[in-house]
Amino acid sequence: MSTVPNVRVPADASRLPMTLPRLAEMKRLGQPIVMVTAYDYPSARAAEAAGVDLVLVGDSGAMTVLGHPSTVPVELDELLMLAKATRRGLRTPFLVGDLPFGSYEVSDAQAIQTAMRFVKEAGCDAVKLEGGGETSVARARAIVNAGIPVMGHVGLTPQTSTALGGYRAQGRNAGAAERIARGAIALQDAGCFSIVFEAIPSAVAEELMAHLEIPVIGIGAGPATDGQVLVFHDLLGIREGLGARFVKRYADLQKEMDAGITAFAADVRGRHYPAPEHGYSIDAAELSEFRAALENGA
Image (cartoon, rainbow, N blue to C red):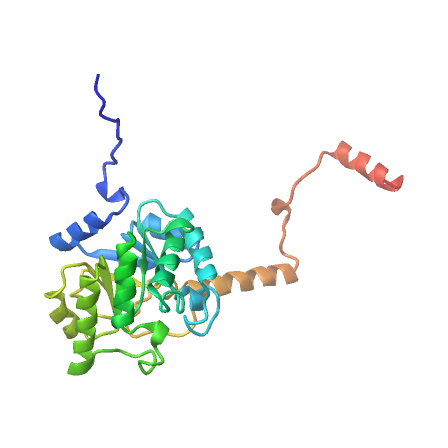
């Protein structure tokens, strides 16, 4: 009697859950990797429906969802809540949780504990941390050694944007580009499975690609990287203003949402909503009995 399990494989193998070996194979084959951010069940369902490869519960949720002026104020428990909601909406993409500012820098033990919470409590497959300096590299190595995959992040690192001179492109002179290169290679040597390049010159990213064996996801780093990521609210236009130079808007949902709620408010104030078709009926006899009960002081 055969002991081989009856495994049902979908006709489209891309709908199998994403794994680290598959990501590495995509890089080897030159297949573009797609990553988006998500922060709740609806955004996760949209990412799932689109068939993206990776979903990042980014600390950008501090600004896009929680209304903070930067990513710095967001608390660990807040990001864990967002990650839990996102996990419920995903089946196939690889889920990465962003370690918020102050949750991993103090010590290796702190970093491991924070990473474990993302995995155990929120169901993340991996975590991401910012920076290619000595501290970030050490924390990445410690988390990897604890058995949790880590995604690195170099270039513009929003958590430390003040030290970088604000939200601006990085690596635009030789010395700065060299620092980015050293950080990226150090993160790779520390065991990171992937690295994000944010807001660096396209030519710098292209030069660096030959020196990295792990998948590189770009955001404002040109077309040479192995994949691309955009913030959910940026690409769908669920925000005010133009956003960063590298953002391409694929929809303008903020305008649609504003128009929809404005139309609803106008209907309510004009007594056009609710209309008869939006209500529920009751049998005439039941209504008469109810009226009688009211008249009798029920």
